[in-house]
Image 1 (cartoon, helix red, strand yellow):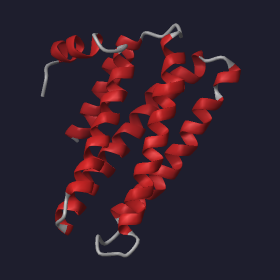
Image 2 (cartoon, helix red, strand yellow):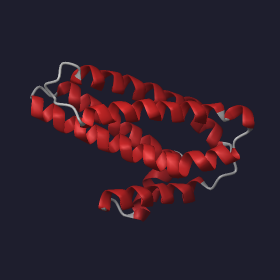
Image 3 (cartoon, one colour):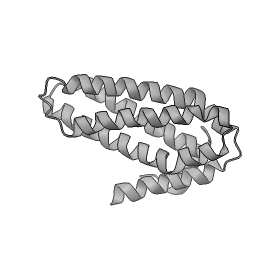
Image 4 (tube, helix red, strand yellow):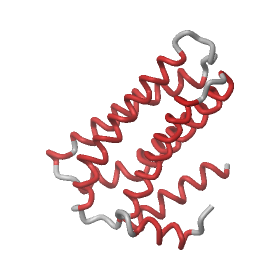
Length: 160
């Protein structure tokens, strides 16, 4: 795992750190969905789905606990609908994650749930990166410091 200073260095050149942390999560989940699509063995596919569910749960937690509240407080009223939509999308994604976590990979709806989850996540990522993040860049927020807190929160969760 990269050191904090290495993380700062690699993320600072791409986007404000908080946004880069979240975009890195988006890329990780996208790669996992591709891995699922390529997997042929049922157990391998189930293992990838477990990783997808874990990654999405962790990502949603840090967004909902740190990112969304601070962005909501700084956004103009007419831009807050983006966060409302994101939170509703999280609820839908969370529901599918819960269904997949308790499902048998041989269930006839298992793959359909994964496909719908992938579509929801793709839509959510497109809206965040295309609409919300550009607005966040213009806000008076310390995105470097927030990025450190996002990374710390991810570390606390993954270490416990």
